[in-house]
Length: 130
Image (cartoon, rainbow, N blue to C red; front, top):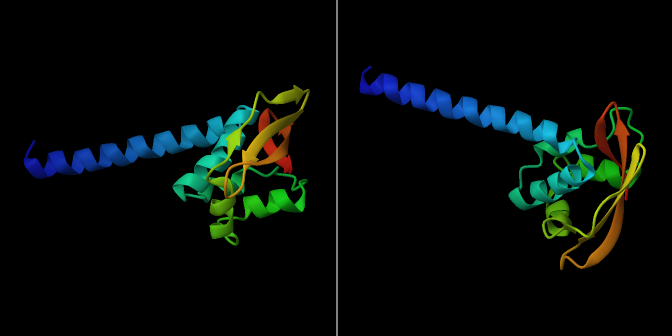
């Protein structure tokens, strides 16, 4: 194998590994209430908001605040980052059947308390309301 072939193979392998990691993380995002909420915070911290469109239920049944978060990549990007980049989960999620409540702190100073409500549809957790 010559140097050019090794370089091309290395680039291809890096892209393939990165793609697999992203698909796995998107799937894992829906596995638990904590994973979904942390995905929101991670998107705000990293600035990569592409996964946010996948956090609202496929049936569209969520409140307007949730829809704003799901559309943050298209509309309220800077405001979203400002409010959720310092977010953190407080305590353990409260799960009751296909519903979950996750208590968080968020906001510009990371101290505003809120409860995020999630719903489980077809084995995946989605954002329902704030």
